[in-house]
Length: 419
Ligand code: EPZ
Image (cartoon, rainbow, N blue to C red):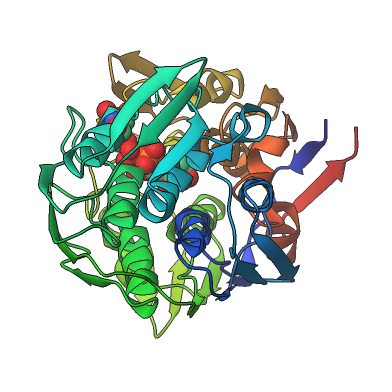
């Protein structure tokens, strides 16, 4: 397994290009199953999670071609069963359920495992499918769906932790070919949901309200092929903003959509960082004495849970007491024990982290656990004394395109060691 060595203390300056959004590309690639005609998706990031999705689509019978960031998918004839050995590698594979049900009225996909950030149920996805007329069964580790017909319905997809992003995506993709009108109440409003709805509408769907808590879908008889460019990855962008904050340099992000990062920009400005918003660009400059902040993760447009670990790394080196409450995935603190190995002073009280900033952290061998926790360890290592060895780097490669190369271009000193 590869590992990366982060040599601390190198300031970051310069410009970094943000890649296409992983969490937008995954459901959009799955949505191409809804038509027999070819779809061409561009600005698709080169990530292992994307590769897994393309493997699943090929297994389902779609013809998949990829040339750098452009993917062409033609799903003329498809099977409806996605096997465990591919699905188990990536939980987001669950988003093929909606298109398979929508197009073929049946689907068999292995149940997504849990993961280190917590239990990953799909009860809300099933609630939406059943509202449309599907019957769901769990057997031999698979979720099986079957529907004689799909009829539009009104369904509320709010769970105890609020809306569901992939649940909203899945129900939307099943509803676009249902008879009649579907209303999704308490829908997720993330930019990635809006990007998917825009792609589906280019395919001939009739979706209104994406980006609000109430999405209305008028079913249509069939969808046609379409071309689409995936939006920039707001979490990758946020991660580089935090890198600029941690290393006190002058970092410019390009090909970013600043309107997707309002809550993070507010939090960083509140801490004292100067952030310039441009057309498709964001610029952050370091601050000699940033102040601590209190944050709570919330569904979009609130502070994103996917930026929680990265902020823990920043606030661990911001003097004063900061507090972060995690309301989406209450167990999402795998990074805390590793940051403490580097000298961070963090105590957990339920789903709240109390962070006492320290002057200097020290590099250490640390273990990556999930995608964003791993990124947080790299960020902490940028400033820590000495070398931080981040093991199990495959976690990072799932969601960050060439993070070591991009940071080195900004002046970091990161080595990737082939295991
Ligand atoms: C998406 O996951 C993202 N993944 C996650 O990003 C992100 O953290 C999450 O949304 C929240 O923003 C992709 O888009 C591929 P949810 P998703 O359904 O859709 C509970 C990353 O780092 N819930 O919005 O799976 C669930 O347990 C990843 O890129 C139910 O109770 O998350 C959680 O507490 C990590 N029942 C909350 O809702 C359900 O049926 C939000 O989950 C579904 C979810």
